[in-house]
Image (tube, rainbow, N blue to C red):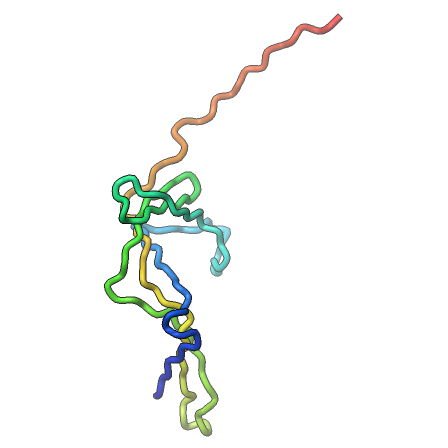
Length: 136
């Protein structure tokens, strides 16, 4: 079987992607059975890193938990590919040819290796309402 790899964007203008690496499991609620495409998991923000000025810092907020992470360069870049089958195969005996289209390149990962920090420390207190005297 012949597999062709095509890149229509050129090496210098390929869209940059990143990998988010978490320690643990992100589980959706039971109401999301099956397809989780388009599911809002949390909020990823770039933040200045207090420990080192050379590494970019990131925060990832999921529900009431906040994770702190850093941007790490991969030793070898990864390609993001889209697989398409062409109709170049003649007849039923030859399998169709497969083309792989490059749609992005991954050069960095955002690594969250520490335990999450809880954002809620104690429940909010209820204010007591004071009775106002009736006006005459």
